[in-house]
Length: 169
Ligand code: HEC
Image 1: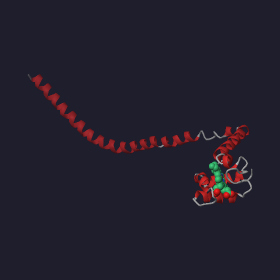
Image 2: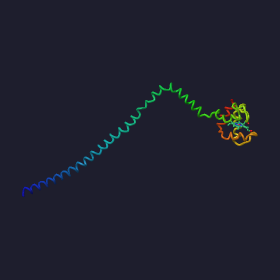
Image 3: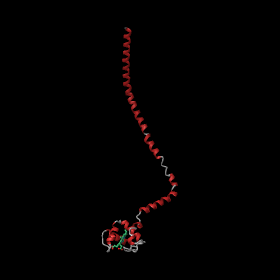
Image 4: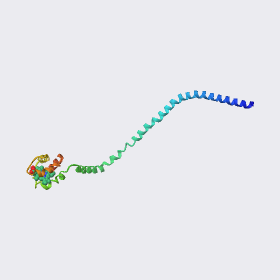
């Protein structure tokens, strides 16, 4: 009986002592650990974050020397670029010849006149001025009714381009 009792009290007392020491030790340690660990953790995050944004731009800027090989190309490519530019300009610009094609039937392939008056002996300004009158619905000559619909769809640029073309035929 005595042995059992002794064993229990010893076990209890050691357990209480141990927990008391543990609590005392813990409370002291955690405060120290918190104050000591906080600045260390901040420093670590600073150290980790800094290199990331710095490293990325460096890698992205590195391929910059790419233009170097372009300097070798122009001699061969420049001629073709000019050819393409000419073709594009020809297609994009309003063509007097093409626009005048709808007028040929009445004014002649050379603007010499036919159903309509001769045009190739007139000035650019005269031709444009007359086309503007037809487009505006004004009466120009006795056959204005035949010509007016032809001018109605022409823009100011169309008129200029056609006049410049037909007056030099
Ligand atoms: C269906 C025939 C016909 C077509 C197509 C035609 N015209 Fe005419 N055009 C005439 C006739 C007819 C007159 C004279 C009208 C009048 O009496 O005012 C005329 C007059 C003109 C005049 C005035 C000439 C002058 O000295 O008075 C101009 C400029 C003219 N046409 C330009 C054009 C142009 C540019 C086109 C093509 C976009 C065109 N015409 C298409 C029949 C035509």
